[in-house]
Amino acid sequence: MDYSELVKVYKEIENTAKRLEKTRLIADLLEITSKEDMEHVVYLLQGTVFPPWDERKIGMSSRLIIKTLASTIGYPEQRIESLWAKSGDLGTVAEMLMKEKKQQSLVTASKLTVRKVFDNLQRLASLVGEGTVNKKVALVSELLHGAKPDEACFIVRTVIEDLRVGVGEGVLKDAITWAFLPKVKGIEYGRELKSNKVLKVNSLKDLNKLKDETVVEPSDEKLAREIYNHFASQVQEAYDLTTDFAIVAHEFKDKGYKGGFILKVGTPIKVMLFEKVSDIKEGFEVVGKPAAIEYKYDGFRIQAHFENNNLKLFTRRLEDVTKQFPDVIKLLKSHIKAKDYILDGEIIGLDPKNNQWLSFQNISQRIKRKYNIEEISKKVPVMVHFFDAIRINGQNLLNISFEERRKKMKAIISQEVNKIELAKQLITDNMKSAEVFYKESLSKGNEGIMMKNLQGIYKPGKRVGFGVKVKPVMETLDLAIVGAEWGEGKRTKWLSSFVLACIDGENFLEIGKVGTGIKEKSEGVTFEELTKLLRPFIIKDHGKEVQIKPDLVVEIEFEEIQKSPTYSSGYALRFPRVIRIRPDRNAEECSTLTQIKKFFMKQRGRKI
Ligand code: ATP
Image (cartoon, rainbow, N blue to C red; front, side):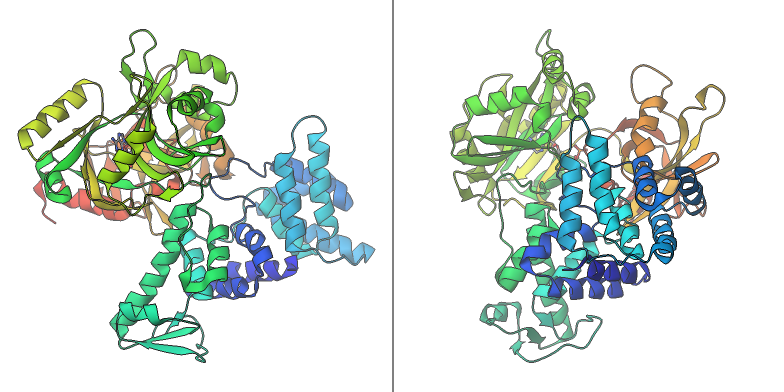
């Protein structure tokens, strides 16, 4: 596919705020994309060349792009800088300069393909060592030489990982559904349906009769919605299993409505999540009796993938942290015997002096560590508790009961105390024993307990009620930082007051500002640390205030939620305070507006 076709769609998407239109445009593009180009088109649509869990980054700074533009087009860097300062978008600056240049030189560019752009950008990420900068410049410069002005705009934006087009997960999921699953009469697709091969259906079950029909005609409107939701959830489930829309689009293009069940060792799966309940009684009500009750360890979740002697570790955010944990790799290789596996567990820290379990805060430094890994693994030793299994010896375990999954997991792990163990478990229907177990768990420094339905299946990416958590701490919110202010006096180098946001659908809505709970130095969350973490995500820096791309999530304690016209969420927090940074959480996973409304209604005895 020519890159110009993709650019045409980028521009059309950019020019509409309507979700329906965006979905239509992307669905049309996907329909005409070949299987070979699917990966390239789907990633580039999202402004990247890697799946979200891949640790590789395109990794070119705005500064270096300015240099590249200057040498490619032959303009002084200073001029590019000042144009950038005015427009704030290096992409449009590149487009403008290319237009000017074309008028002068009249060189006709040869056609750029989507594949070429994709390949060059992927190669950028793999460059290391001496001469890297020049090689990077050469790769981008080669693309710019072959690009038309509007193509240059999107190449530049992709390289600096700021596409500004806004193709969210929801839109992409619908677009794949529209493009590759049968159309449902009665559902709005943004254009007339071609109805050459139609299957009439009276219930969801009738979908089993589907052969090569491209349109389904349900008997009524309600069924139409149900069927559409069924198709959309098929796509969602495939995404939960792979976290990679390129694989999902390819799968459905290939198999149509028969597609979706893809489980690959080495490709992280969205973890199953747990609802919170207020006490054990409510826990039993949700998960049934008897229940499996386990310690809720205060570490961080790890998904271990093993096949062909290759072992990978992913966090709850599906980041690859294999390199950071050579000690865990060694441990798993020596203590787990299976041809392949995908296991779900929790890494916790151990105090090297007395083998006491340490809380998450103590080991969080290991997740991001890139150097002196051996040294830190001795200073901050860890152990693993496994609590679930997704695949073992080629068998997909998603649809078998928790009880069975645990048995199969137990069979392959040789447990060793304070190194590798299964989560401590009690199976009971008795309130008293459950209470004793809960207290015991807390006394060991755990966060609380998990209560699990013995018959529950593994539902990736969902909080489904097969398991719940019980913990004593007061409610906190996980909020994304979307803005800040530069400090004053001795804090001028640091960002100080932070704008917090919750999420509603795909939109981040502000709910307050926080400056408390952050320290000037030493222990805990510091201004310096937050500034360092947030700096790469600064989108706009106007004077004292900066706008920040949502990425970093912080856990916030507060006294009360109040209604407020000041913030876009309609709510404000009274006395918010930062408890900790949540590196294990994506911005998209921060607290939702619905949760906030629920908390608001519950506080001070208000009834929902
Ligand atoms: P939290 O902030 O409470 O850890 P979360 O949103 O990260 O919550 P939840 O699914 O709500 O995740 O809560 C369960 C979390 O507790 C898991 O993600 C996992 O990291 C951790 N955990 C510790 N012990 C267990 C266990 N025995 N079974 C399942 N999860 C456990």
